[in-house]
Length: 232
Ligand code: FES
Image (tube, rainbow, N blue to C red):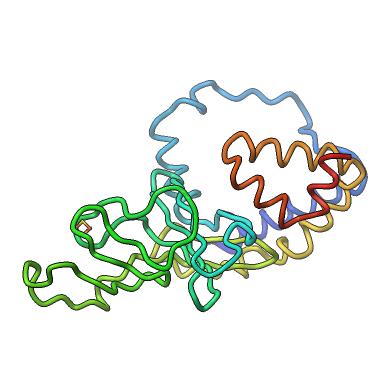
């Protein structure tokens, strides 16, 4: 990312935090008008997917969603099927959710698994992404297993959140990009939100519950404050 773009993001983030502290909102000097095409133009949509959603860090899960080794969840983001899984070493990883043989979708939904077996020809991958088994190896010939591990995306787990860049070749330093917002900015905003913690907690859990009720239950179980505030 260009340094000036990062600086602009940091400036905007500080401005947002200052407005939270002052209980105010940021306003443009005059009424803004945005052409409707900005919401429907397929070329612009693809540019946004490419330049933003596939090349900048995305917060994909709360750490508690992958609470123990083997815990996993699948999702599709910016047209990319993802498998998030915590390895036996405790490290959370983000993989392309496709088999490295012929590209079949590997895992579905969420849960806990020590390994993932492809439904097509039964290649099996470990929770750390390595190819660990090939059924009927006589059919496939000599396989260089280390070369056929799942495709991994750059990932960082910090402040209870799992971030990734959906470009396996990206060299972006996710921690530097976040610029401390994940440990300083979010708690500061939470303090402000805390003025109305009940509304915040209810809205947050209700939103997740609509999309993934099983995940909302796990988040509530792992965050007693959130669960209590949502019922207050
Ligand atoms: S596509 Fe997965 S084993 Fe063949």
